[in-house]
Amino acid sequence: MAGRVPNPLGPIVSDEPARRPTRDTKLVDRYVTVVGLSAQHADGLFPHISGPESARLWDYVNDGPYDDVAVFRANLEAREASRDPVFYALLLNGQDADAAGGGESGEVVGMASYLRIDPKNRSVEVGVMYSPRLQRTPAATEAMYLMARHAFEDLGYRRYEWKCNSLNAPGRRAAVRLGFTLEGIFRKHMIIRGRNRDTAWYSMVDDKWPSVKQALEAWLDAANFDGEGKQKKKLEDFRH
Image (cartoon, rainbow, N blue to C red; front, side, top):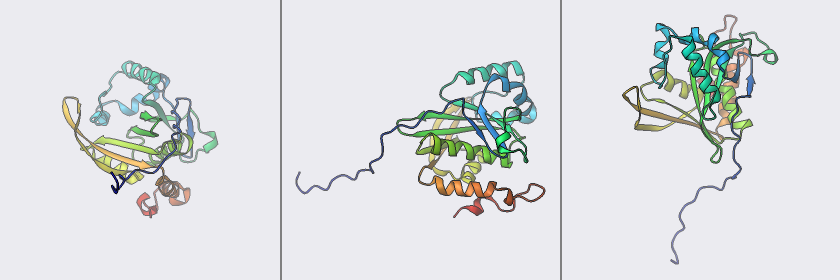
């Protein structure tokens, strides 16, 4: 009809798909090494995520906790074969490890994954399982920095998601601290262990990544830590 105002349309973007993440990826920095997860990591990781003191790690996920290393190893074998999610082991290098020398000899202290992998729309989600040994350490932050950098800069994703149970206060604090933005709460999103799960939905997008990256790199810089390894400034303090 003449004179009708056109509908608003989004900006034109390239239709080139992102690359799929693979298990043969190896990401190395000062504190941590990220490598494809395999059943061989079971013996090293099991002591960090088993036992009564670690049972709460599994409260918001569908599997675990584990009290039998053989059962846990079988679970990792299944994860090893998965193409979505793609799982990774987080290996602790130690504070003074040289980035070029990091490798699979490090202590296995956690797991991470890329999931809901959508190369066409260039969107991917990150998942994490930090053992108490890894929680609240520079290595934990560095692992998330490495995976975000890989997703944006190497694989070509434009949207990077973090989702967690809305009751998972530590997970929600971690998302905001790392630079994710809350997009909303998906009510009655899942049923986990027979209980309702409302999901807190966070994202990081490619045009915001440079400023998020700058803050992460500044916080992780050795100059930001004193002789005892304590931070001088919080990560949030580096954000403009």
